Length: 199
Figure 1 (cartoon, rainbow, N blue to C red):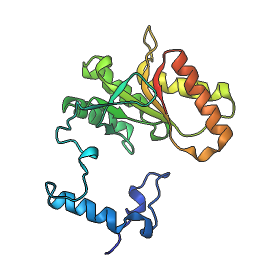
Figure 2 (cartoon, rainbow, N blue to C red):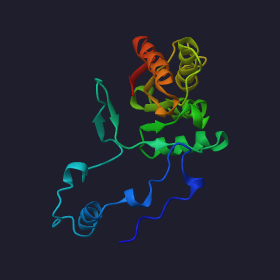
Figure 3 (spheres, rainbow, N blue to C red):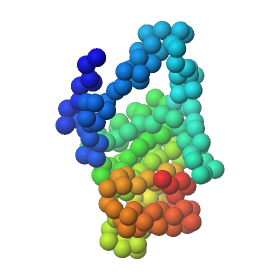
């Protein structure tokens, strides 16, 4: 069987590389997927544990090691320039999305927050994710870098500082010390109530 074509490099996130062709698929995995998609009722492999016929924009799932849940489907805004990001987020929210995913690397956290404020939907009904890509060189500087994200998203000019629902480390490529520094900054934000869940 032919291997899957690799995605064009221009469409890949800089930290997402295509798998080598020999790892992109296995005969067993391809057969199970094809059997499921061509005839889901008679598929020999039970894939129902990973699919949900009732999946909707309001479907949620638990966040590991957290008391919170998150929407299963989210609106990602990678490569969404500032000039259109607010409108695209507002359109997504009007369409029923309640999860928007940004990152420091995307340079549109402020626009995501602005869209949420302009939407008229209570902040408590919208789940916001962002990510930190690299440590800033010290625990305090990294903490400030993360705190800046929280303020851009849900706290600038507000009497009360806001929060981010999920703050992730974007890539493990920085090494152990950088990961530790980022993790400690995220833990501090959780303790201060500025972030609800981390990963």
